[in-house]
Every structure is written in C-alpha cells, then in structure tokens.
Amino acid sequence: MSKSVQQSGFALQEVTVRYGYVSALQNASLKVAPGEAVALVGPSGAGKTTLLRLLNSAVVPSEGQVEVAGTRLGDLSAEALRELRSRIGFVHQDLRLVPNLRVSQNVMSGRLGRLSLWQSARMFLRPAAAELEEVHCLLERVGIADQMYQRVDRLSGGQAQRVALARALYQSPRILLADEPVASVDPARAAALLELLTGICAEEGLTLVVSLHSPELARRYFSRLVGLRAGRIAFDKSTAEVNDQQLADLYDLEADREL
Ligand code: ADP
Ligand code: MG
Image (cartoon, rainbow, N blue to C red; front, side):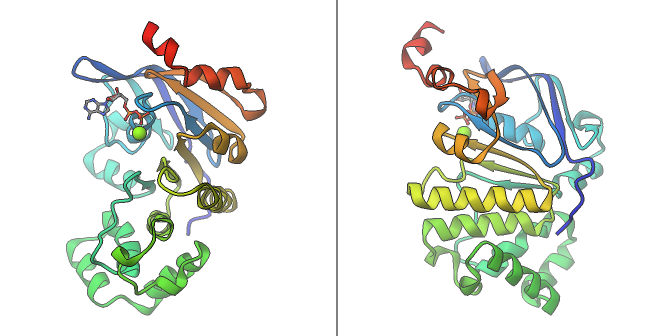
C-alpha cells in the first residue's frame, strides 16, 4: 500500500450541484488537507452522497470547482482522470460487491481501473502468488482472512463491509471515501468498523472522508465534523467545538418545514 501522503488533499470552491430543479449542494466550499480525516454528518437528503461523488468525479459540479490532489478535475484529460480515480477508494453505501464471486476476487477487482482487459482476465483466472499474498494481508488487516475463498453472498453484513473496505484498500488509494459505511449494522459492529477504518487511514496517512447518519459515532471517531443540511454546509468545525444544539439543529424537522 502506498505510504505517500503527498498531494492527496482536496478542495471544493463554491460548488453547486443541481439535479433538474433540485439543488443537492449549494455554494459549498470545503478544504481537506492530505492525511486528514473528516466526517460528513446530516440528515437524509442533506447532500452527503453528492459531496462524496464530486470527489471521485462521479458527479460534475453545475457551478464552482473541485480540486483533488492539486488539480482541478474539470481540467484533466480522460486518461488523467482515470488515473486519479484509480487512486481514490470508494466504499459505497450498498457495497457493490459481486455476490457470486469469492472474497479474494472481489478484493482484486479494486485494481481493475488500472489494468487492461487482458491483465484483468489474467488476474482473475490465474492470480500470481504475490497478488494472493497481498490480498491475504489486507484481509488479515480487516479481520476476515479466514473467509478469503468464501463466496461473498455467504458472508454476514459486517463481513461484507470489510470486504468492500479491503477492495478499496487494494487500490492503494491516496484518498478513501466511504458513504454511510455503517448504516446497516448494529452499534457494536459499527463502532468496530469505524475504529478499523480510521485506524488504517491514520497509519497509512490516507485522506479519509466518511458520511455518517449518526452524529454520536461521528463525534467519537472523528476530530473534524462537517454538518450538511439541505445542500448547504451548516458548520465545519473541530469536534470539540460542535455543541449538542448545532447537531440537533441539523436534524430538526420543524426547521425543515420553514425552508
Ligand atoms: P444524502 O446522501 O445526504 O442523503 P444526497 O446527496 O443523496 O443526500 O441527495 C441530496 C439531494 O439531491 C436530495 O434532495 C436528493 O433527492 C437529490 N438527489 C440526489 N441524487 C439525485 C439524482 N441522481 N437525481 C435527482 N435528485 C437527486
Ligand atoms: Mg446518501
């Protein structure tokens, strides 16, 4: 895995994203330094997923600029954008694993963005010993090495999440993005997964952005919180400076009706 922390920060400059008449994000500015870990908090529909998707260029801003690793995404050639995206790990909310493939194959698919069709086929059909060793190491790290040859559809929800994390790490990412990675597991498993995720990113110096529905978990595992509400950044503070009222306001249904 890359230990490089250089050039892995990002910045949004007055970014607006519109889907038809809906503004998913409005005039959002945000700067995250290389190696920093940030949690995005806010209710459903606040714009968390949209913000994450901007960073891996799955969404293009209607207005404003997105800069990742020192370059504006809009200025990159298709080839340069593909290279950059291959270094951004994304753990999707619905995981997007391939159910009838083994854990090892799902993890290896993390590198497909950087391989030719021929190389991908070779890796799937006849993985090299070094590749299998690397996959095994990653699975050990996320605590499921004993499931390496299991089919993904036989795993528990918590195990599947660890596979999705290992797949993202197999990309040797510089930036790791995770969209509500603990939305579907019980509180004990959620805490364990966040501890693992933040621990690995801190050790490797990866920039980490995680969206979380639960402000309690965000507070516990992150030192910087970005609160989103109705497409706007409501606050961006160190966790120690965020008070209960600010969090309550984010989720306040009464205020929603006045918008
Ligand atoms: P969150 O992840 O915080 O729940 P999203 O970023 O998914 O928020 O959504 C923000 C807003 O944008 C919501 O009002 C949502 O309905 C809208 N939205 C998101 N994606 C699309 C889309 N592909 N087409 C239309 N509207 C969308
Ligand atoms: Mg979302």
